[in-house]
Image 1 (cartoon, rainbow, N blue to C red):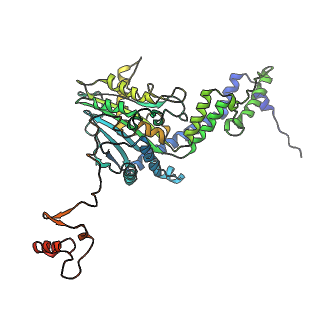
Image 2: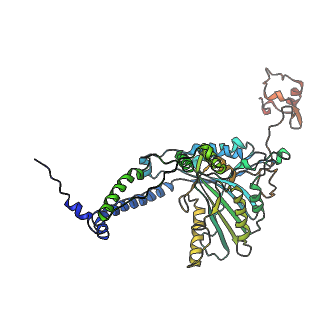
Image 3: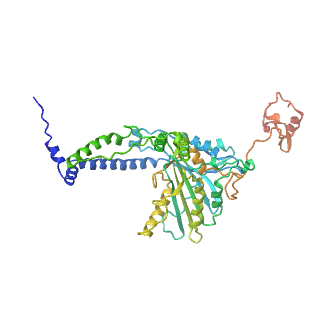
Length: 474
């Protein structure tokens, strides 16, 4: 028995005019696209619901970090701090993600200036408090860490407000995140005394914070989320693009579909008329000898970034002040000047997010849109929301240590930065000991007397004035 396949409906469909063909295709198969969109939207809403429910179970604390005066630690110490915090990264299973709402928790590294007094803060999930404290003490043994109340409490959350006004924005990377910014290593030079060979870029920010008057507040946060290593694969793609290499066939779904789409399109054009595809000359991949100095620099720095530990991160600032003292131009321009220190025009840089999060509006309905942006920015800052606003970029530990580190006192002369009162140290071994204004030898705490008689004449004299039960060794 022969099987006959009737291709007449397909031929009739291909002979239809293009507009009628598109309409029938949507009529027969469009429901699949709509169903796919509905399923995807439903899954997204479910994930938001289940993650919100799980997030309510997590508690966060705010830790104030005071380093001792005379700090000489370079940003390398803060880089090691971020490395240690990578231990908070954990894998989330399918069941945990879709049924429990578990996701990777974030840290918030903050610098806050209130009335000119500046404080360094770390907001952490309570279960990672020991991890944060250990990371700080391992690099700054004399630091003081104190749990404090959230400084945003008591501040207006809705605008317009009768007393306060705000300005702020998120700051995003100018280019793809795989391109690094200028890091602290490029602020070092070999001229002058050793203590001044590092020109701390934090100096300008500390000076700005110290210049605030009563009634002004400046808030700066970097939301940091530990992540895996998949982001580093983007380095190979970018390097291949610079070299002019084509991606391998089959690496992407579009690569697999390309021959099919090409064949269908050729068949359609054959029915509607002759088709002669334009011939394109294939570009040959460049060798390292043919690269320009800028291309070589890009490849070197991209590969260097991909070799480091990375975090997903987002920068956000808020300037909150009373209306009678507010000076948006001074503070916002001052921070932009600080953040521009990390620009490398061949690689990457920061820019304020003018399109979505910056408290600025133009053209239509300006007042209402500006109020909406202010309220959204304030709520996102107070909630330390990672998912709200722009998509986080990827920063290495070296980049994070560049834009958030404790200032080096030799380079930074900001007088109102909160610091620990002094360096802690153990007492010298030869320090004399006294008890009730009478000398007690050091070995009294290490050697216990045998029998009723004390081993030393000085101890006998001490026993006459103080009963034995009051002595430390009794």
